[in-house]
Structure formats: C-alpha cells, structure tokens
Length: 276
Length: 290
Image 1 (tube, chains in turn blue, purple):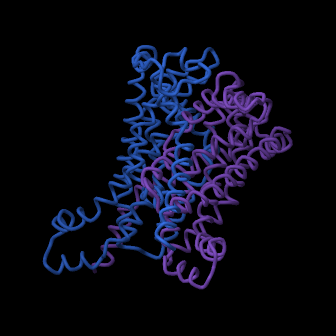
Image 2 (tube, one colour; image 1 turned 90 degrees about the vertical axis):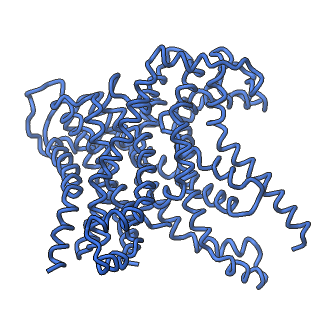
Image 3 (tube, chains in turn blue, purple; image 1 turned 60 degrees about the vertical axis):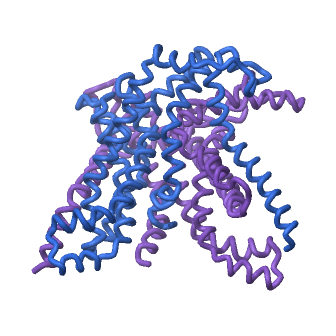
C-alpha cells in the first residue's frame, strides 16, 4: 500500500469510528445536556443542542424535593460495603484455592459459579418473606447482605484468576530464606496481590451500584439507592425530564469514570477468566 | 506434616465463603420448592394447604405463561442478534488504527455502565416519547408519522434499550479476543492474495468463535432475568406484550400475592436457566484445566 492510500484509509476509519462512537454515546450526552435546561426547554421541539439558557436549578431542585443525597449515600454505602464485605470473605477462599488446591477445588469453583446462574426472580418470594418476617424490608443492612451474596461468586472467581498468576515458587524461596508467615504476607504476598484485589473491588462496586432487581423489590423510601430511587421518575404525573436528567447524570457519572478505568478487568471478571 | 496442615488451613479459609453461598442457594431454593406445592396467598394468611402439583398446573396452563415464554425468548434472541452482529462490527472497527481511537473506545463502552433504570427512563422519555421525544422530531423531519414506540412496538423498543446496554459488553470481549490474533497470520494470508473478506471469514471469525460462545452464553444468563427495564417503562404491558418470565413471576408474587403460583413459576425459571448454564459451566470448566 502506498502512503497516500494508508492515510486515506485511516481518515475513512476516523470518520466512521467517531460517527458510530458519538451515536452510541448520544443518549448519555443528551441526558447531560438536558440536565442543564429548564423543564420547558427540555421538552421543546425542535430541540436546542447547545444554545439554551444553561441552569443548575435542577441539581438543587432534586435535592430539595426528594433528598437526593440520602439516596446517593445509600448507593455508596451499599456498593462499597457489600464489596468490602465480600472481599473479606473471598480473599482467604480464593487464596486457598489458588495456592493449596485439592481435587475438589475445581468443583467448588464451578459450583460457586452455578449459584450466580440461578435466576434472581426464583429467590424473590422467599427473600421477600424472610425480609418481611425479620423486619429487613427497606433497610440498608438487609440489602447490603443480599448484594454481597449476589456478587460473591464473581469476587471469588476474579480473585482466583488473579492469584493464580502469582508464582508459588516465590513463596517457597522466601520461606527458604527464613521469612515467617507475617513477613511473607506483608513483604511478598500483599504487594503482588494488591492490583488484583483493587481491580476486583472496582468492578464489583460498579456491579453493586447498578444492581436494580433486589434494590427495586426490597427497598422503598428509606434504604433505596439511586438505581431504585430513579424509578420514581417513571410516574406518569408529569414530564420532569430536566430533573430526571440531573438525577441520572449524578447517578451514572462516578460509575462511568470508574468503568472507564476498569475496562480490562471487566472482560476478565464477567467472563470468569474465559477471555483475558 | 506440612501438607496436611496446609490443607486444614485451606479448608478453614474457604469455609466462610462456601457456607454463605451454600445458605444463599439452599434456603431460597428450598423455600421456593416447598411453597410451590402449597396453596398460599398473602391476602389469606393461615389458609395455607397442600395442593400437590396444582400450582404448576395453574402456572403452566396460564395463557400469560406462554406469552411470557415467547417474550423471554424474543427478548433474549433479539438482544443477542443485535449485540453479536454489532459487537463483531464494532470490534473490527476499533481494531483498525485511526485518530482518536482511544476516545471512541471510551464512548462505545460507556452505555454498559449506565444503570438499567436510568437507561430505560432516558430512552422512554427523551428519545421514544411520541410527542416530545427526539425520535418523533426526527420522524417529523423525514416527513413520516411519529411512532409511539412503547405502545406500538413495545417488545422491540425494550429490546433496543437492553441491547444498547449490552452492545459494549460484546464489543469489549470480542475486541480483547481480536487483539490476541497475531498480525503475522493475517499478513501472511494477505500476501497469499486473500482479500479483506476472505481474511475476515477464514481467519478472524474462527479466531473469535470461542469469545463469541462466551458472549452468547453469559448474555443469555443475564438476559433471561431482565427486569428493571420492563418495570420502569411498560410494566409488562400493554396487556402481556412485554411480560417476560421474570416479570410474570414478580407480578404473581408481589402484585397478586400468590406465593404458591409464583414459586412454581420460579422453579420453572430455574429449570430454563439451567439449560443454558450447563453449557456455560462446561465451557469455563474446560478453560480451567488448560
């Protein structure tokens, strides 16, 4: 290929690539823009893309009207809390399976994975009744436990695939050199395991933040995180698109940024190591 | 005896995770199975009675069940079609060198991180609204009558909304697989005179086969349980036009308060999901040996 042809080809792909990318991103961009409009401008046709009276009013309004920050705080507590709790349980388990495998290890891993494949709706009735009888409906504690259990198989699996890549010989070498268990953990294991644990943490916070089956069914006004709170904008009483957009923008912005940082881990985490 | 000691420690380290997941599986499963044989309505407490297979008979002969089964299959099939075909196209596109490719990649993967309730409401209102939505404005500009998407084409509309969220997932996985394809192999084929289409059909696609299988199986597991998108847009309607199995069971349980019927439905849903899960587990298990 000549140089001119290469440049031409690159230019063509640049145009196609950006067009497709912007088209797929458009609903998010449109939500962001609409969040700065007045309610009147939000439903106006023909739509104004940039030349409208920009306002921050909607962002204050969603806080005044529906205590947005409470639900954002719920989202934060539930997603971070359930993930950290999951890690506390999963790190020792994944560690043992990666470094002291027995003939049952593979079966245990496969069984854990299979629990993730049960349709959540099949557990809806029992969970609802248990939550009702133990007074857990619309409490953060109850939902936190459920979100932790929902994501536990993914956490164990992700950690396992990361730990598998740590060479076991390093541990033996350290032991030969006379390192005791505490030193082994602090100086050798922790530095090597930290990146994998951080990736797992990030991806599972994202998954828990966006979870919308259990949050919709087990919470109401008090414990509702953003994924359930946003659903209150589906009422047909009026078109509050600007406020919906402001609430939506704040709900997806932090997770989108985290998601952009964790693209690679996403592939590994959600394919259970089958594609790396 | 260091190994025996190590094994005991390992077992101890695993036990909390195993115990929790065992409880998380067995308790709801056992309860669902038990309730599925009871006549049990939350509005009539204390009147529970054994009814054998009555709930199954009721659930499996309900016309709504067949609608829900068809809708579930159409929704899963439709989203798979869009995401697999679109995902292969996008992955090949993002594998080409062009200016700003890194940024475009960020734009393409973004929808995956939008929570389902937000994406459904944004699409329902700002894009698909028959009067004030952007699609209606585009239709006007083209001189055609605006479509009331969620009323006239409800299942198609929900398929689009869900597919928008899953397209990035397929793209990312296929792109990851594509990038492990060696340049030399492609170049060798081009040297031998293979055109771009021949290279795609005989080298790229076979290389993607495994990643494609993974995408199809994992998406199927998640798509069988689509719920929030339906909950905030159509509530299963009009009629049962967008009621899938998940939504039907939810409605039976928390709108009709029919614990028995919903539980029988839950058992049916587990059986259906298992048909897919068996294949996925086998595939991932094979990978674990390698």
